[in-house]
Length: 492
Image (cartoon, rainbow, N blue to C red; front, side, top):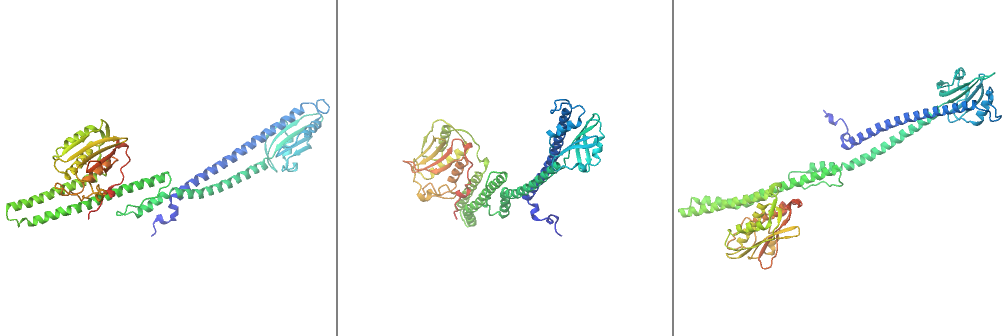
């Protein structure tokens, strides 16, 4: 059985069609309402104009009848025919009007506009007008249609007269109706054109949402690299942009997780193999000294595994927003404190170059951790009594912290990847048997979390000099870039 939702064509459920349909319905309702209102207003204005015209014609006739004959200079008196002659010599009928003059019930004179019915079509209406004894204004249905009139009776000796000004609004009402119908056709055409344009524009506006749906369908847990092309700054584009940002965060998170698992499995494989091998040979050790040596090797590998896991967890946390706890850090005090801690690492010529007093916004504990890591790295590549310098300087909006040692310089082939994970330098010394290759990656992660960077900088008179370059206020630094992939360099 076909589901109910499939009973309608697929395009009917389209958001674009529904939006345009709602707009079109609202336009049609507003158009119908405006046309009806326009028709009513125009008819009311027509009635007002007709009433004003009838009042004006009747008033002019009454003023003339009570005045003097311009031809003789004498009052008209009972000469009704003279009144009508003078009046009709001056007046013409306005649109839709007819002017009628009666003497003793007989039509004496008339004027009518074009398309106005002849008096023969008035029927019994004339008898009604002739029966009036006082000036009367009103509306009456005739054989020629509804008419509005103003009738003014005149009493005289020996004859009586009747003046009637009548207006037939049918023609003007018809013109209004034709104009309204034309307006309806124009608005329907405009609505149809607006609907087509609306469909096209709605499709363009909603394109990011369609791309979002298509991209979401093509995304799998192993491929989060797809992105939606964003054009414009409207709400749909903002949704697409937010979706891209979410994909970037998910990709970064999944990349970090995969990298963590890959790094962990790769780096723990060797110590686990060593531990397994020595445990299998433990029963072959015949003397307590031999068993003690085996236990020492196993313990050392376990400790090394703990350090690797701790470092990997630290690097994984570096991608989180709560990795740093920012606050004011007095730079000179930081250098003095870290130098005091460095002196306990090994017997070296520990030197210090203090910066002028100043406060920066940073995470004091993380900077201390990074500098001590650089100091520990310097100890591995120097001998007893070798010089190691800790220093800091403020240049413009940047803060530079460095640890320089007098040991061997870093070979060019190592300098390119010196801050990558699990990359061990080719230089060895008596005190450096090779670590996990995570120390400098931790330094780089701390620097980048502050919105800065870690660099290997040539310094005259020194073998290797590592610098941490930070903005003076880490809160104003741009968001740290996606750096998990850039720092990762597989080792096997």
